[in-house]
Image (cartoon, rainbow over all chains, first blue to last red; front, side, top):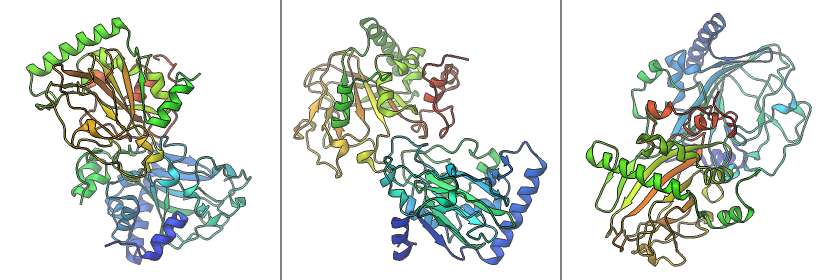
Length: 254
Length: 254
C-alpha cells in the first residue's frame, strides 16, 4: 500500500514538490530544535568544522554527525516513507545539513538552479528522479522570510529550456514561495528549478536538509559518514541510507 | 577538439554500439596478450582470486590489479578519447575484467540490458559505456557478442530467444584481434554461443559518470590507487568530488 494519497501523488508528479503539514509533533520539534541549537553552538565555537560561513548564508554541513536524533529524523515515520515512495526502495542519503539564512538581501537571481541538472551528466532528468531533497523548517518561514522559491512543474523541463535571467530571485515568472510552519516539511524533485529568496523578515530562517538519492550514487563530498556514525547503523535500512549497502547488486534493504 | 568523428557519433547514437578497428597497435596487442597470459596463469594458480570459474565463462575480475599495463589501458589514446566524447567529461571507471569463453559455451534466453537502475529514464540516458578489446580473432560461430541495434532507445523490453543468434535483427561482433567495440549500457545484448574450437578472449572496461559508485567488488587496491598520478586518472578512480568540476584530461601530474 502506498503512503502518499492520490492527491499528494498527483500534486507531486505535476509540480515536483510536496508540502507535508504537521509532520513533527510539538515535542519532536522542540527536541530537534534543541539538538540543532547544540550543533550550532559547537559549530560556531569550532571554526574548523565544515560548512559555509558567508554573511548571507550559513550551513552546518554534515548535521548527522552532531546528534543521533538527526539519524532518527532521516527515517522519520511521517516523512521517510513518502520520500522513499517517490524515489524508490534503493534510497540512500546523499548529503545533509542545517541551513541558517540571516535577515538580509544578498541573494541574486543567479541563485536559481536544479540540484541535478549540471551536476549529473548522462541522465534525461526531465523524466528521471535522481534526488529528492527534504527540507524541515525549525521556525516558521513566511513568504518574505527567505522561503525557498520553486517553479512548479519545472522538473519536467528538458535541458534545452533556458530559465529566464532575473536580477532578484523573487522576479522569476511563476515562482512560488514555499512558506511553511515549524514542524511541517516539504520535499523537492532534484530537477525542480528552485532558489533561496531574500530573507526580509527580522529573524533567521532555520532549516534542516536531507538529500536522498539512489544507492548506486556517490555521496556529496564531505558527507561520507564517519566511523562513529557508521557504528550507529544498526538496521539494514540505516546501512543502506549511509552507503554501507551494495551499490548495484542484491536486494534493497527492507 | 573532439576525438570522435561525426559519423562515429551518429552511428553510436542510432545503434547503441560502435566498432573501432585498430584499437591497439600490433605491438600493443602483443603486449596485451603477454600480460593477459601472465594474469590468467596467476588467477588459475590461486583460486582465491576474484572472478567467475564456470564451465561457460571464466572471468578474471579486477584485471587492473594484475599489472600496471591494464591501468594504462584505461586511457588508451586510440579509444579513451572517443568514449569520453560519448559519455562526457565526468567519466570514471566502474569495472574491469578479462573474459574467457571456452569452446562449447552456450547460453539460453540470455538477452539483457546492463542498465536497469531505478529512477532513471533509460531510453534517453547514457549511464555506462562498456569497451570490449578483442584479444584473439573471433570467428562467426565463436561466441561473438550480439547487439540489437537501436534497442538502447526502446521504450519497451525487447523479446528474448532460446539461442542468442535467433533474435531477429541481431548483429554479431565477430571481429579481428586488435579491434574494440563500445556498447551503451542500455543496448539489448547477449553473448553468442561459442560453437568454434577457440576460446573467445575479451579485455573489458566499463566507464560511467563520476557521480556513480564503483561496481561492487572493484574498489582499487592501494597499489593501484598509487598509480593515480594525474587529475583525469584520479577522476577515473573515483578520487575527486563526485558533483564538482571535471578533470582536465590534458593536465599532467602535479
